Image 1: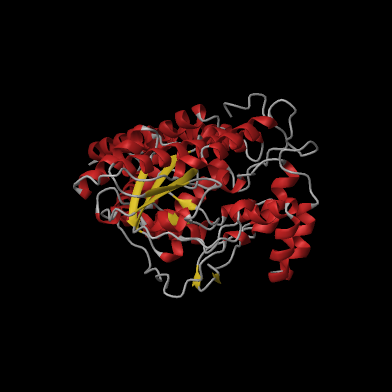
Image 2 (image 1 turned 135 degrees about the vertical axis):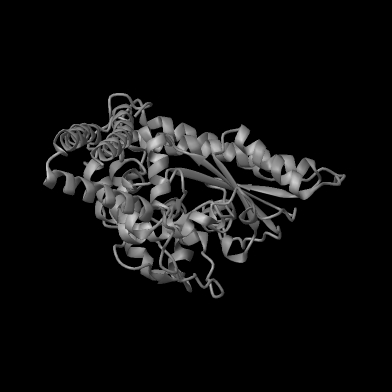
Length: 461
């Protein structure tokens, strides 16, 4: 019996240390010094435990404790594989009040340059005037005096967003005169392959619903207040991943560099897909940063690409909130991805529950813009949202788009073997999630430090 226990001990020693060494190596290359140091200490302690058990299991009390430990580990392992989450209350979307893009903070900030539009808007929304005037009084994100302003580097994201604005005309166009006879399933597959080839990490398709669309345009003076009219029946949602190593420096300049870079990549893919569909003879419009008719997050959720997170962003099962999204609407009635192997709908309940218990983004938000309570009710339905006024005001103070909530999210980890195992682990049940959250706080810190200056190398994190 002692030999059997000894053999099982060595197996437990090897398996546990393999996982810990994977974490140690991964943390080292991710430059997570705290996680690497703690992982090293745990490897040493774990090794000492199993070696001691094997050396002294001839002692009755050690043999007894050894057996109890192995039984507990086996039970723990079996329980960890059980899939269980409390029934989630479904969102009732029957009475959703659509969002007016003129109410978006980006649109409201633009009003400072258009007095006539501002007069019109605040006549209808006098309650927003005081807070907006305070925000208007702050210099722009790109102007000197911001915390992370840099004479040489800050103009980079101005140039990127300027380029992005120049691509707006590629979003739409007339379809080819002769419609081609097509197989919709095969076209949908081509779209997924095309998106992946040009850099998308995920693609979803769903039927276009009224609440996916803004009610009125608001980002640009030339069409400000125009009613959104979109008669398409399908929406294709494109997800691109941001580099975690850039986001880790939040809220310094690399965050807005990476964010703007991926907005460009997402726009490129959406414009190509829209053009492809038009060449087939069907109308299509791309929806990209600064040029949306579609609200990408609810469309992405309906397409099975992830869950709505506490921070009001999409939480992708692999990349978490560390993504940027674009979309294409089309008259083509394409098959929904929620009915295919490309959907993550099997994993969404686990993400929603994790967001309920985690609250790490809320605890770390520099402006307390993220709620710590239950999912609030607004615009006719229950959904997460943030205080966009305090959030955007902070952006204008520091000179970047912050991103600290994305940085601290436990789902914002590189797609390495150890993190893949953890994602599978948290997708099983509520106990696993509690344990994983405790370990994430232990290894990475509950409240990691907020960057107060730009790193030396701004393009590599």
